[in-house]
Each structure stands twice: as structure tokens, then as C-alpha cells.
Amino acid sequence: MSTIEQALWDYIDGNLNEFSKKAIEEKIESTAEIKAQYEELLKLNSAFNALDLDEPSMSFTRNVMDNIALAPAPVAMKTKVDKKIIYGISGFFIISLLSLFGYVLYNSNLSTSKFGFNTNLNFNLAQYITPTVLYSFLFFDLVIGLVFLDQFLRKKIAQQ
Amino acid sequence: MEQNNTDLALIQKVLNGETDQYALLVKRHQRFVFTLALRFSKNREDAEEIAQDCFVKAYKALGTFKQTAKFSTWLYTITYTTAMTFLRKKRLDTTSIHDEDTVLQLENQHAVFNADGYEKQDSHAFLNIAITQLLPDDAAIITLFYKGEQSLEEIGEALHMEPNTIKVKLHRARQRLKEKLQYLLKDEVKELL
Image 1 (cartoon, chains in turn green, red):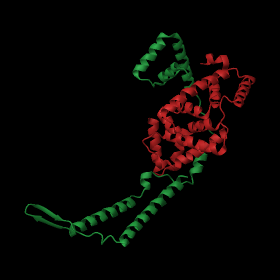
Image 2 (cartoon, helix red, strand yellow; image 1 turned 45 degrees about the horizontal axis):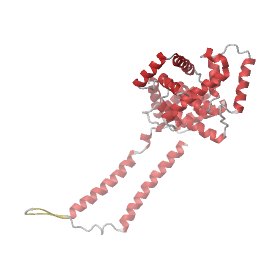
Image 3 (tube, chains in turn yellow, red; image 1 turned 90 degrees about the horizontal axis):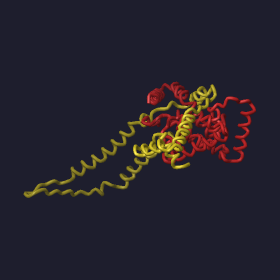
Image 4 (cartoon, one colour; image 1 turned 120 degrees about the vertical axis):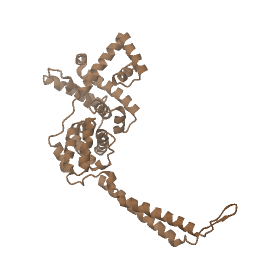
């Protein structure tokens, strides 16, 4: 396809900026050959616009509705996710963090000297992070992960 | 835009439990989805199956539809992927319009029209014959652009291509369609256009 034909199509489609539009308009006005080509493309464009759409069978809509009759009714995604689960997980982590922070504050020794603060944050966290605590924490995470995996797989199956 | 709002309103109703409202959405878009499916499959029975499958998939996934986009664009994306999957399964022959067999088929079609005493050269009929002889992608792009009221960006989204690629393909498809019309109508193409 020639560059001028492509430019003419872009002009017909309205894809040109002001500068290019003026340039092609000048060419159409000044050159008889380009004007003829433009008019031919315009007619072709009108013909393409008049293309017919095909009609499916009379029972098409009924067939579709029959097919979906047994499928579960669609629900908006935002309502599919149970908010209680999200709030439960957020609550767990917030309480864990606050408890840890409170414990640290409780066990720290804040004292002020004459010329300023002398903060003693001396505590031994290692005695509380025992293997049992770690395993419990990981086990809880694993359960949450499995719940999400279950929901994800259910959604996949529902989509199929 | 009004149509788009109505689509969204219907979708909302379906999502709220009025599932029978989906029939209105089907009726509204069935001709276009069927035509698009036909552009790919080149066969009415297959196109009907693809189009039905498309509407069923759209129904099941309606909850995931982002209501900021046009429903039609989303539906055409599903049509494209469903048609591609269907074609891959059936391994349909999607030959080029320049292939020998296709040319023979076209000659026969032209002969049939003459033999039937097709006196009035109906431009729509010839145009529809010509478009069925295009490559599936070209035919789909022409259909989406002219009948689907889709922008280059939306067509790109539906066919999983860049808008610039669509633009180039659209130019090429028009050129091929014009050549096809010239082949079918020979000297009469000038009168037609």
C-alpha cells in the first residue's frame, strides 16, 4: 500500500493530527489524481460501513439460556471475598504487633538523667521466641495459605 | 454510551440475581458475536457453537467483568479466545485468500451468481462474499472496526495485539477486501463503488 493511500485512510478514519490533516487536505485539493483516489476510498469506506451482520439461528438466545440455567448465578467479585477472613487476618497481625510492642515497652527501663534521656531497652527476646512459638506461627500461616489456595482453586473450577 | 450504560445496568441486574435479564444482553450482542465467530470459523454450525460457548463463558465470568470498560470489548475478547481455542481443537483449515483452492472456490461462487441470473449486482451481497474470503484476522478486524464501533485500542485489546499492529492490519485488510471485490466484480467494481 502506498504511503499516500495510507495517509488518505488515516485522514478518513480521523487519525491524523492538525498538521498532517492540513497537509493531506492540501494535497487532495491540489492533485487531481489524489482527489480521485480519496473519493474512491471514501466510497469504499461507505461500502464497508454497510456490511451486513449475520443472524444466528432463531433458537440461539434460548439455547444460551438453557445452557446457563444450571450454572451458578454470577456474583460480583468484591462480594465473593468474605470480608470476615480479611478482617480476621488483619486483626491477628495487628494484635500480634501491638502485644509485642507493649511487651517491649513494659520490660524496658526508661530513666531520665540530668542532661537528657538515658533509655535502657535491655530485654532478652530470644527466651520468648522458642521453637514452639515459631512452629505455631508457621502452622497458622500454613492454614491461612491453604484456605486461600482452596478459594483460588474453587474460583478456577467455577470459571471453567 | 447510552447502549453501554444499559449494558452495565443489565449486568448489574444479573449480578443482583435477576439472571433472566441476561437474555436481553444475549439478544443485543448475538448478531455481532455470531458474525465475529463466523469470520474465524467460516462455518455457520461452528460459529453458532463458538458464539453460544462465548455467551456461556461470559455469564460465568460476569462477576469478574470490570465495569469501567465496554462490555462489548470484553465480550469480543472472549469471542476471540473461544474461537481460537475452538479452531485449535478442530484444526480448521484457514487458508490464505491467495491459495489456489480458495481462488477456485471463488470462481465457482461467481459462476453460481451468474448462473442464477443474478441480474442486480447487489453490492452488499458481493461485499459479504468478499469478506468471507479474507483471512480470519483481517475479516475480524474489518468487522470490529466497521460494525463493532471499536477503536483501534479496543480492537487491539480484543485480539491481543498492539493498536499500531491493528492499524497496519486494518490498512492491509481493506486493501485485500478491495482486491477481492475487484476480482469478484471485475470492471463492475467502479460502478459499485
